[in-house]
Image (cartoon, rainbow, N blue to C red; front, side, top):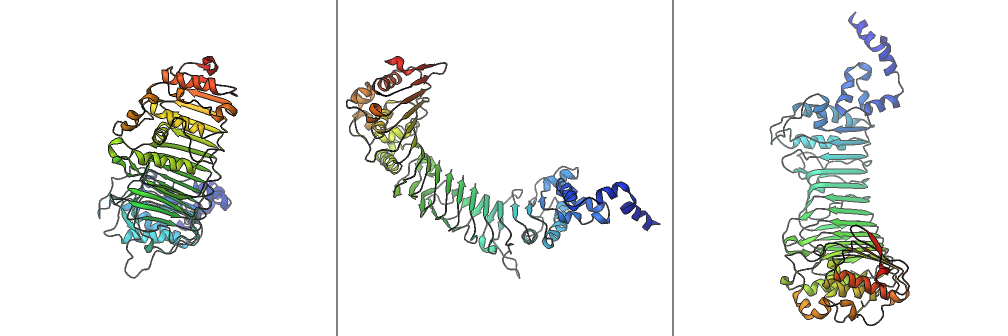
Length: 519
C-alpha cells in the first residue's frame, strides 16, 4: 500500500507529471533560476527529481545565499577551528563530490564561510573537488569570509600532488588568499585570470598559464618584484596594489601581444618597465608612487612603438626613459603633480615632463593639466622658446588649468610647438586646483628670476608671430571664465592674434559670449 502511495506521488499526480515531463532544457532552466540550495532541495520531491540538480550548468556555493534560502540569518564569522556553519559545510560535502564526477557544470563559485575543519585539509579537499569538475569553464574561489588570508596552493598535503586543473577551465577568479602557483598543475586552457586582495609571492604569477590573454589584479600585495613575462597576454590591469618593500620594487612587463595596459594606484613601485610591447595600443598610468608621502612618483621605462592612446596622472618619478617613438598616437592625456621646491628636485620635474612631451610629440589630440604646464615652464629659458620635437600632427589641444602666472610660459611654448593646431580648448578651474599642493609649492627660484614676465602682461613678451595662430587655429573655447585680469589678457591675445579664427565661445558660470567682443 505504501509503495502504491509512493507511486502515486511520483506517477499519479497530474501536476507532478506535467512538471516532470517537461523537456530537459526547460526544467534545467527552471532549476537554474533557483538558489543552489533550493535547486538541490528539489531532489526531495520524488525519486525522479533526486539527481536532476546534477544537470545544473552553474553552481554558486555561497553561505549567505544558503542561509537566506533556508530562511535563517547568516551566522557570524568563524574563528580558526571554530565552525559556526556546519550545515553549509555538510552542504559542500554533498554537492562538490557530485560536481567532480559530472560533466554538466560549466561555472562554479566556491565561497567557504570559514576554515570549517581543524586544519586546512577540508578547504584543500573542497578546492580539489571544485577543480575536478570535468568540464568547468569558469571558477571563482572566494575566501573573503576568512579572518586571515588562506594560503591557496602554499602547501601540498602528504601523499597528494599539486591541484589538478581541468584543461577546459578558461576563467578563474581568486579572492582574499595567498596564491602560490607551485601548488597547482598547469592552467593549460586558462585565458582570463582575476586576482582580488591576493598576496603574490615573488616572481611571475602567470608562469603556469601558457594561453592567458587577460590578467586583472586589484588590491593585491606583492612580495618582491613583479614580472609579467608572457607571449600571449593581451590585456593587463593592475589597480591599487602595493609592494611589500618600502624601498620599492619594479614592475616589469614583457608581452609582445599586449594591447592594453592600465596601472592605477600602485604603491612602493620604483619603476614601471614595459619592454617589447610591439602591439600595445593603450597605456594608462595613474597615481602610482614610489613613496606617496613624499610625492615621489614611479619611473617610466617604456618601449611601445604602436601606441595610440596614453594617459598619465600623478607625480613624476626619478627617471623617464622612453625608447623609440610613439608614431601612431591619437590621444594623450597628462596630469602631472610637480615635485616641491624643498626637495631640490624641480629640475627633475621639468626634464621629466620634457622627455615625456618629446615622446608623445606625434599625438593628434593632447590634454594637459596646469601642473604639467608648470613643470614645462621651468625648462623655458626664453619667452619665445619651443620644444625640440614639434607637435606637427597635433590638431586639438585642451588645457585644464587654474591659469596662474607660472603656467603661461608653458602654454606659450606649446602653442609655438604646435604649428598646425586647429582647436584650442581652455578649461579654467580653481586657481589652486591645478597648482602644486601646499606641501609641494611651486619653484620659488623660478618665480624670483621671472617676476617681470610672470606678473606683468605675459603675452606682451610674445613679439614674433605664433604659426598656428596665423595660419591654422579656427576655434578657441574658454570655459568657466570669471573675468580675472590674467584671463582677460589671455582672451585678448588669442582674439587679436588668431588670424583665421572662426569661432571663440567663452562661457562663464552663468552665461556665454563671444571672444570677438575683445576686439
